[in-house]
Image (cartoon, rainbow, N blue to C red; front, side, top):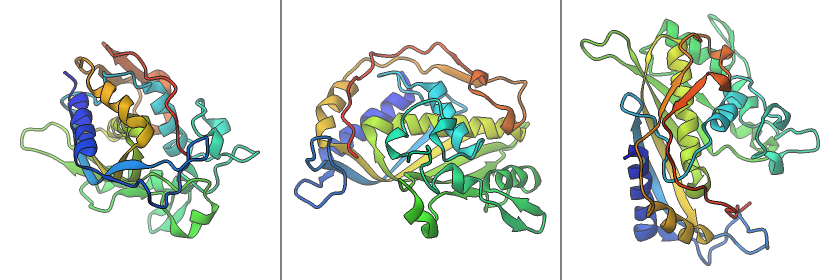
Amino acid sequence: MSKADQIFCAMCEDIIQNGTTTEGQKVRPKWEDGTPAYTIKQFGVCNRYDLREEFPALTLRRTALKSCMDEVLWIYQKKSNNIHDLKSHIWDEWADESGSIGKAYGYQIGVKSHYPQGDFDQMDKVLYDLRETPYSRRIMTNTYVFSDLSEMNLYPCAYSVTYNVTRRAGDDRPTLNMLLNQRSQDILAANNWNVCQYAILLMMIAQSVGMIAGELVHMIADAHIYDRHVDVIRELIGRPQYDAPKVSLNPKVDDFYAFTTEDLIVEGYTFGQQVKNIPIAV
């Protein structure tokens, strides 16, 4: 069985059984009919996925891995904040008439700063540091920039990534690990989507700097299930579980900026039927 399935099911059970509710409180999100969107939530959820063991895709239902990769390329490779550079339509409702989502996500990754070694944006500085000073404890990106929040159409949810390199005795290459911080997550709609995105990002960066992709540690400050999602979650976590798919990258690509979704290789992905018509609170 997929370890990602086991982690997901345990997390959902814990939220439903032991979480707190926002029902009756003043909440920002609303359903399409205008009623408040309440949640059951847990504070400070931490999940760990070891990519050396298996790729963390759910098999309870399909996660669209190439679409996940396309969005992560949009943010970290294209450094774009315009939905016209993205193949999916998941950001459409937050875009203005020009397609911009404001000074969010890719915009922040592309902002350049001056260092003694030269001018770098956030992604280029990560790649430089992993090659030049891989055991630094300062290698990270951050998109939650307070001074620009008022010009973002949506505050970043997954907002910071910290990279950490380890090497055990006998390893032929260093291992690259990632810690993803997320302030808020809609567990049904986005949990495995984000996990797979950042697993793919970790794989791409590790391959670009000659390392092994290791652990992805996912910290979620507010892990919540919306009130109208609870029955869907109960059905989902009761489904059969299958072995994790084998996911790899085209071994010929060693430049982070050369990867495309065609370089993602997915083999043996068995999964349950898709959950359709999930209501989304905005």
